[in-house]
Picture (cartoon, rainbow over the protein chains, first blue to last red):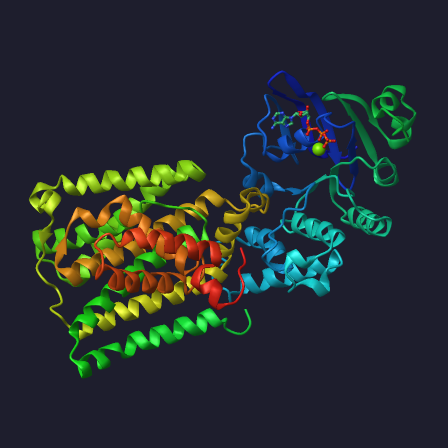
Length: 248
Length: 306
Ligand SMILES: Nc1ncnc2c1ncn2[C@@H]1O[C@H](COP(=O)(O)OP(=O)(O)OP(=O)(O)O)[C@@H](O)[C@H]1O
Ligand SMILES: [Mg+2]
């Protein structure tokens, strides 16, 4: 067994009277796509936000490649190797596609060392930015404003931005939301092809079972099933939690 | 960046006009014009400092006039207490204002939105009251300072060169990763954090750098008027600086110069008619901000963008 890249232990968070996430354990291994599914409000986004450091858990640890990152703020977790794409595209619409990706690339270079636009570090960052855009299929859109991209292209840009920081594990919140089937196929290949550990939250069960190596089912904040897709598909507790007709 | 935008062309023309002004003033024997233009340029340097924080970084500081004041007082104290010359005065003005801005930033940047406005305003007022309590320096009334440059044409050009440098520095900083992070943070803090950038640190650095520029403007004010007083440090002066940046075009390289020119021109035009000319400036500000969201610079560029 390889060591997990990302280990989550005992994650818990309550909002007022609602326990959004209750004692969740989770492992993501290198090169593995791990999908978290569950009904609306089952705590998927909250779990992702806690792993990333955007929401403070009431209890629980996050360990990245053997290093406890539970106390680190978001930028430090990113530099440690956690990347994140957003459920709702919220990139910098008034900036070019390349500038959007360059944020993450340059943060790795060090914002102060890359201060001179003509410096070698800046040139290197520029090359890496273009390579990332080409990889997600936006090679021709580098100089276009982000606001001119289509919905599908925004998703591609989201992925490029998340990959820009060179993450060891990628957190994706509903990467297939609102995509047409051709776009969905493309994004699916991108995620598979990323070659790094992926933890994704997704509503589209077809996409999940086509792509995931491991599936965890949340219901009311608790893990009710976890394992390889076929086993989860057959699990009665998991089937029940999918609710009204969404069962696979 | 491709071709220079119309606003950049306009600011270049404006700078060239400022460079030629002393010749015109000499020809027409209107030295008052030079005094006015010097004041305009010093205000524009201060507005350029604020533009880094407010325009580029999206942090609405209402305490920046106090930072200018810290620079002005530091220059005055050096001249009065030690008899130090222009370089020493400028050094201490910049150092003191940078330090004050660092402290102001460290405290205020813990807050957002209205709270940020109120905290910067309160810290600015603290500095204002502190200056007013400096009895050896004239307290409320202020004090005359030995003139460093007596009506010197060289001073005009020194101020001009500093303004041109500050404007060029704005253009440069905007395009650096540091400036991009600052601009991105004004739009979406979470995304900047998700890119692995320590935004609070970037903002604090920007605040300190902005204070340095304002401290420089403060020293120049002391040189220019041979006088310091707390009156120039109050929150209403800070609000005027904010207005200059917004009217000129927040975040635009040319914004501070346009905004200050509009402000000084209005002041000259209207103060002839009424001492309450600020009553007119307010509505003008509202109209400009509503009509052209990018201020004068955005209007010249024929489009607005955030
Ligand atoms: N900031 C918050 N304040 C209060 N309650 C919250 C907050 N964030 C989430 N919750 C609550 O926690 C629960 C879990 O929400 P979460 O967004 O994590 O679910 P989700 O599984 O991502 O749902 P969806 O499928 O709709 O995206 C919900 O009951 C939600 O109302
Ligand atoms: Mg969600």
